[in-house]
Image 1: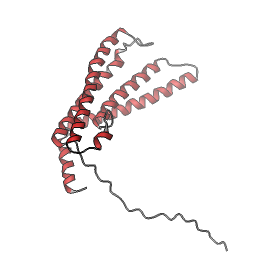
Image 2: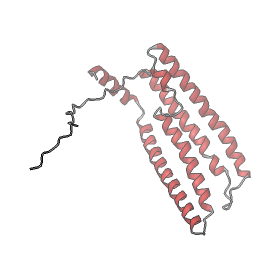
Image 3: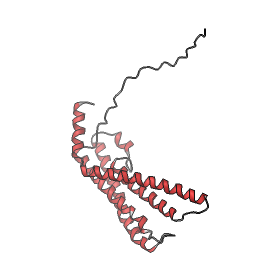
Length: 194
């Protein structure tokens, strides 16, 4: 990596919004807790059913943890360009064509985010008419994850668009540093026994 590439990366890093870095970290930790809780609740569900005394409320906990982990994970993956992002197309291009494709991709992602917000909110409101069994909790508690994820996806997509317009979307990838490895001797030696 040349010095110019390092300066470009440092400039891009300084222009990123620091508060979103903290938000991403908090959301990543929340995803980890949700996934751990999901795994734990599935384990206890299997265990209680195996011993013949099932805890029926565990299925509600499992589905809630799973749904929230999926939608919050989608928002975090959007920030990291790992989700809803067509990297194969955009990375093959450079200059103006890449700029156009990157903007179109993010406009599509922004459209998906607004659909998640709008229709997720409608489902959330309608969810107060249905209840989960056996707890009787409104199903809206599950639907709340959809507009929240949509808002986070929209926020992170706008951040990417602003950073893309300021810094450009064509970022040089950091070069992998090659460490010289000594060759491994794979020959089989036969020892003469005395």
